[in-house]
Figure 1 (cartoon, one colour):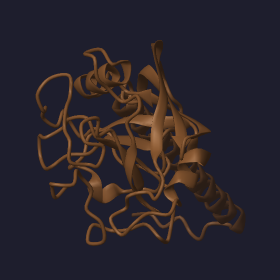
Figure 2 (tube, helix red, strand yellow):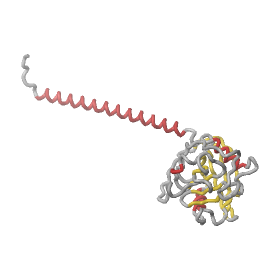
Figure 3 (tube, one colour):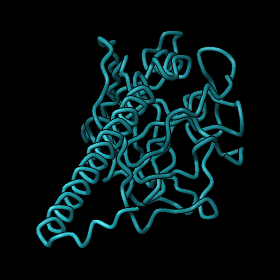
Figure 4 (cartoon, helix red, strand yellow):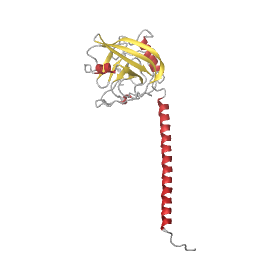
Length: 255
């Protein structure tokens, strides 16, 4: 092969600049591709999340309980119920709130209160946690799509799997250890200040309040179904009990 001699310095500079420009173009192209891929993944995740929560937190009914303590009106608690996610459970609660079958929640009590955990009520038979009655027989756990995310979630008390009836509880902290054991069906929208006060009432060692906490008034209304925004908030609380500390349920059951 014919020897061409050494390249001049100017040619080396041109080659170096050409290589640099080529590398810049290569990295710029890669960065653009990476950015497009990241955006694509974000959109897919967003669509997936929206699909997961679509209809999950759709409010179909509202219920208001007027609360009296020791015979004195102390305010009210308003709840939204998720009738598209747990229609059978909501139907039961609404029927009892409305006294559709001649019996229900009006004049029943919150018979069990555990500080930094929950308030429990709905025993329309005995008033002490031993009674069970619904618009029909006891019914199965409908599903566990909703969780005990934080304060203000309304859930069914029971005596074990598939023994739902009339009793329910309202959380005052996250109680995630109850997920998969109790059916969540509603969320408190107004009255959490009152629930907080009730949760700190003086009770006996079994959680029975020293004075009567009564559902003195009940109001129920259907609403045009609507989704609530950002309902899932886990409230951090150092005093949250774990599964070994508290079991929840009717008085003659383990859960």
